[in-house]
Image 1 (cartoon, rainbow, N blue to C red):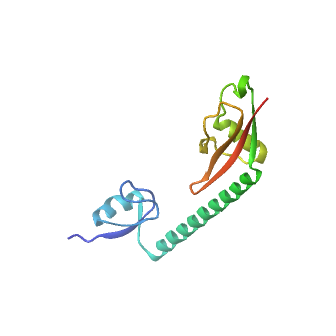
Image 2 (tube, rainbow, N blue to C red):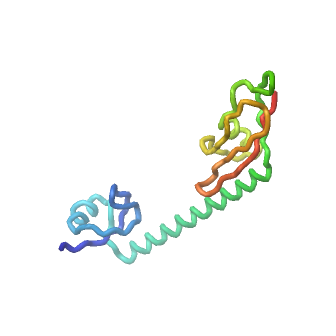
Image 3 (cartoon, rainbow, N blue to C red):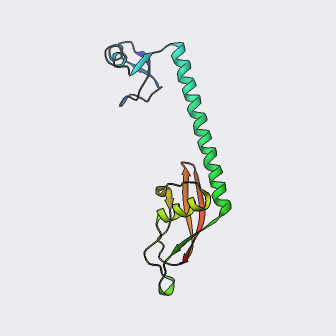
Length: 152
């Protein structure tokens, strides 16, 4: 049985681990490939402290992002309703449809917050009226707002 050595990855390595991971590899793999290529560092107390510091900083950043998303959700839901004006024909039907871009633009005009149009989920809208729209602000935070499609 060959002895395994521990190294800390400096970069993502395919099928081995991500940057900052502590992994066990064969000594030859570490000595001949990972270390010379700069993909890993030998394990020392200083390197482990750096890894822990990086992980703590990343965790704090993720918490801050989620808190900001919750604040944006509260702001969007406080406003509640956004108005989109479209040209309408007979019987309350509109020409064309309301798109994600239209909703994102209406939100940006009302709140000065930019929302990615790809993160907006809305039903097919072909008539005037009120509709519920979901806006994904973060992996764990989704705001539900109401849009009103009105005639020009």
